[in-house]
Length: 548
Image (cartoon, rainbow, N blue to C red; front, side):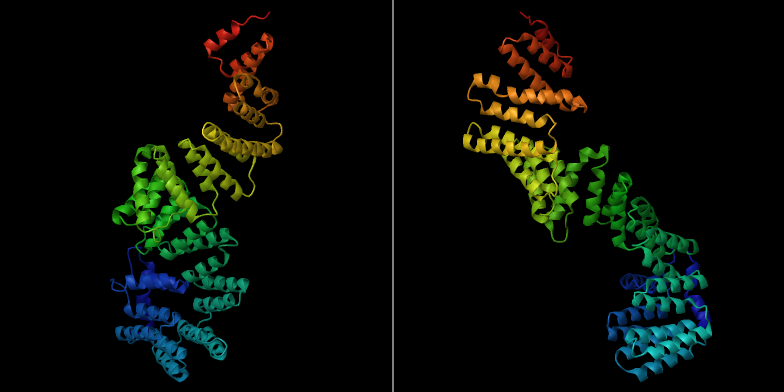
């Protein structure tokens, strides 16, 4: 069979639909410099109908040469020769092995054998040039130049010439020169898939929009290309366009030539593009096919956590995910979101001790992440352990680059209640917490001096320090009075501080009542009623007060 006829048959799958799983897909990945993926597809499809084993073995041999497994490469090339002695390229592959072994004369003999099988084929000349280039681009510079010139003489529009020259420019880090060559390759042959992919890869990080455009152009020419589909999805991913990345991956994973690891990427993208129901359904489908798929289990739970109708199913999912992680922590690693969501579900289920255990593991695994200490503090509060909450939140603040007003107020509140918690059993420890409260109140006050909350907390501390009931009646008055003044000046939504306002105005009203100033007392009680207008018993009490 003449070589051109053979080559036409070998690459006829270019026009086939995605159902054709042959050598073609692996060849595409090889030409795009994705050798590991190429090897997987070539081996996966080696015995499929339509696969040309002489071509498959040639590319498997080239991958082995790149891996410096020369004996393995030689076996592949010889197997390719046995499959079809008329296929020129396996002889060229044997020549590449000879060059790597330092046998230049043997290499030349193999190259001649290959050239005899085909006449004036520029692709064969470029394959020989590549063999020399991969062996030693400096030592064999003249041979490389000669082969490229010969390829041009045979057909100066052959895309292989310009892809090879583009690769050379890329190796020199001449990105513009490489792009120009890849542009020429696809211009001469719109079916040169590798030219589009290599061109796009030059831009995917610096100009992702251009990379997307290039890959869209490829898929117009070759819509069934698994490589093109995957690269376009990754280009969208690199530009953080998760919705379009998920859409493209959705098409790609239907292609029988997709990779299993990309199913996990698709599950990830569905979650981050907030297509939670679809993400849950897809992860569940993956789990049904493989119950040991840890990534699928993670994304099933993560998506379900964002679907309101599934809230009652989350705890069993959290348990199953945690069990899979604990069975093999080294292989089944958690990300921060896993620890966070599992702890949240345990808290909702009133299993606070288990939530605390999960968060302590998270802190141990990711000590640089301050969010776990913050969540741990909030979890301790669920168990009314304010001293532990204060300690955890203080660690959160220490790790935070720029804690703000709300952070300081939160820590002041935790410390205050920790003081209250210890007041009866350990007064000295309680006082330490009250002093810590004052310290954080001061930090908050420095950031927002016109906010009422620090004054209110100082009044709360004064009440806790009061020695008896008589002192309680007056201890908070100075701070609560200042807090009330600031409340009056506040322009924020008053409903946000309803509870504090009622506490302050009720206290001030009673203070003035004790001091026989009924007018002032009623004034503060009426301000209380502004925040609790439906409290009829309180209103009757206020209305019943008589001024002298």
